[in-house]
Length: 156
Image (cartoon, rainbow, N blue to C red):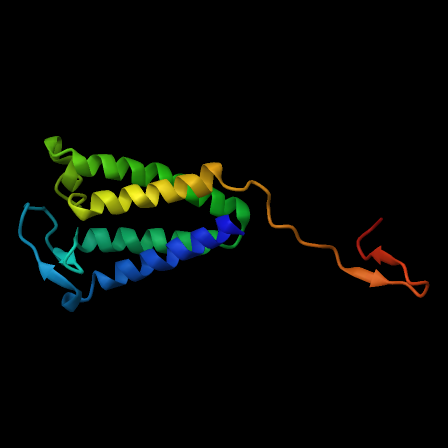
């Protein structure tokens, strides 16, 4: 259950983060460093540099997490992919050369985004790679017999 609920919680959190980015009152206008896509470019909650592309990515990650909640296998795959991608994004946010910290001047990844991506990657890595591997069990319905014994309703 941990894996499935992790996907759901991360999904809801990232959908909310993506939506928060579209609310001008929840951010401070930003102009540096220059990006090719400056629409909605602000520090969300005064902390996280983001633009419209960043908001859309957060919405997409959130929706994928919510959809992954439907099964253990999908949740595990989501967590593993999230760990790998967000670890790469955290490292990119630390590298100013070749415009990696701004994803080639498209999406800001610097500042507080670095630690947020690193924490997300670490949590997703634990759940996806080190967490429980047992799938959710669905118990077979049990029927009672007249003699007091029980028998599985599913073929014996």
